[in-house]
Image (cartoon, rainbow, N blue to C red; front, side, top):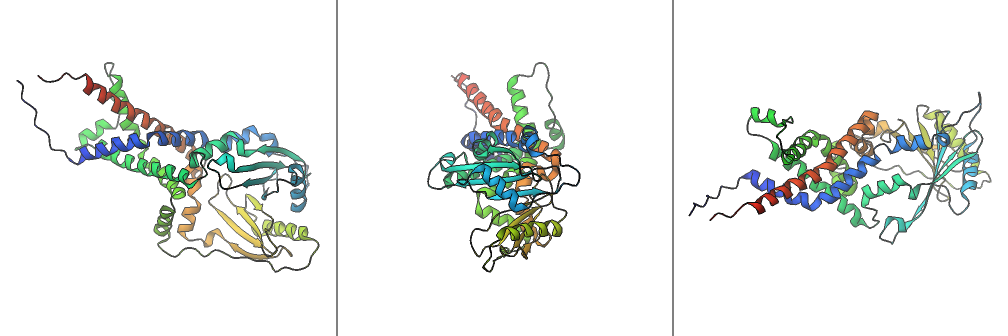
Length: 395
């Protein structure tokens, strides 16, 4: 009769390994979905621009000026019809770009996103002639579906974002625990684990194990950034934490309250046009100006002024009297504290756009590798289980 092996003392790494395994099995499918949709969405802007090039770009004649903003709004609204009122009109400083308008309405009460979506359209209008160049049903477009899968699994109920948020939180723990499991005891062993050292006789299980560990280690730092920025949207408490840490203050920013004093006027379009004209002079460095119509008789004309093409993090908000078009107030980017700037840059950090095209390539590559981690991890677990099942019992 053979001797029974003594039970080894279960150290810290043993329990980290157990946590890594079971948390991975719990969240693997959601993490896989998030990584794949993140990959697909990474170059959404570039692909969409290429596909819609003839609608996005225009060729003005020398000296040709933009039509008044109110005229562009009217002509764009006419193309959509009265049942789908415009929410905003965007005018670019680039003379070769078409005006970009949004019309959307989202209801509440149903579980699935598409059941609550009444309409969501994007319209491109020639800013010099008022000709509508393209109308797109953005709500049911491929990239919007991918985005909403990534955002909430196409679920309108808060549980959708909670599932995404907690799966991301578990993924953070997985990354940290993975580094702990990977980290060797000495420097010599560490060097060996940084590179693939495969021979012709190396079996696929070993290759799969190396792919999981080595790639996982290399992408872990960027993957943590992607995960943390995702959690900013999913959890209010996490967003507040990021704000407090970034601003070194527990005092939230005071929002600007801008109002218009109602007066009798028969020409609000003149005030609308004046607001756009003033914004162009006040913020000549802007990429584009996005403006909406006031929602009631005391609201101001609200305008979003984006400064850096292809990003959203650097912007101003300006407010104008809806009856006179006079400047009322602003939220200037340079006056924002660090907490506001970090939260405002969250989207651009998450998709890599804050570093331009190289950043998007980096985000795509890391997302692609992250999509493989649940698969390679599952194969490691399955391989070990099969190995145990085939091991003969000791007599």
